[in-house]
Length: 501
Image 1 (spheres, one colour):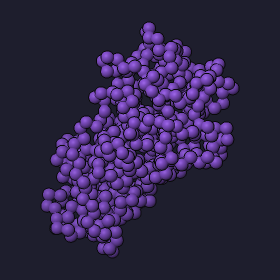
Image 2: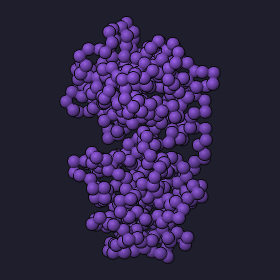
Image 3: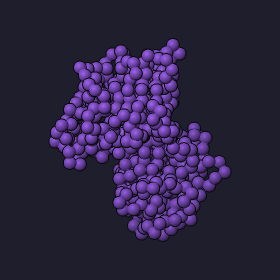
Image 4: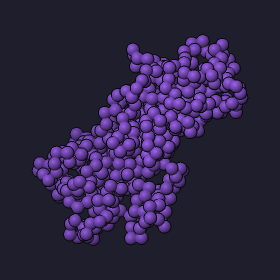
């Protein structure tokens, strides 16, 4: 459920507008009588910048909110303030301020409106940090993402599936997109089923209809970038220090294509170990000092299961991925999210943008492709260097390490299924082919696992380092995504019920 889904749920069944002379556009943008809903093109609707470079937005929060409500709303504020020059400050004497009240529904005016400007966050219907962030971004001057002028290049509006009296909520406007890529994960994006007449989708991504649209957790990296650009925030962007990026070598021949992503991991290994200051086992499993890489016994390294039966894995995708693409597209983030989707679509594991969680994946374009094994605690780095690691299969591979899985050829029974050609392995990389006492979850050996090395992994001279038994011609590894057995193992390890995938 996205932030907008929650907002619709709270707003749609009101008997009348909460304030006289007011109506809504796009479901939650408040419009006074006689006012155009989308007249926020000039700087007149922006909150003013102080001489110290910050933009102070005063607010008064109703005493009708309890302590938990206040914490949720303030969390929404912090998710914006943490990475921008916007500062939400308690109102003292300022003429213009946000008057945050638990009225009927979740809604806001667009931009600074003048005087005591009502922003409604109903209790309990709107008490989500992501919903608070969504309405605060309206108050900063932002429309919904799917309203932008170029939206038809990126999404298809399925007009026939929309409630007949809500078609107006899907209008397109002449917007200033600030040279930003279209953001499917914006906190300001309608969900896939927004205002659906019969439960069918109303919005689909053109590049991949399976892409998740919208979310409920907080501003995306591009949301933050747009705030900083609109308000001309200095020294709050992330694009000033990208480092150099070398193009990854492509797979050398057709025969090696099946294991191409893992071959890519091998090629980026030396860069990882050189620049990340980490120890690596098996090429891409990062190891803290004084810890064995393959100690993941019991449930201590598993991400916890929620009471609803799902396993939520919070993550942050670095805005540096936008910098690498020169703000011309969002393909790196889409690639990573496709790797997540390949796991989530068949399991109870759901990757969710981080809001406030202590433990989360911090996905960055560092040096090489690597991950820690299982949940490691705190901000847990997962490196997917751009462009060398930008394959959805590589993303799935590293995410499976983060879920607690080692490489397939490391399992305890591997010698029954493959022959390790030790003489063909680079002399200083033999340890990457160790065998471990693993819990194989009663699954068959999987030559097609996304976690299996390719046939030529760490080869000294181009000869095979792994040969399958009994048929040496069986393809090893692949680049598309988790195999059916990979999915089975995730569901078994995390005890996923059938209704959760």
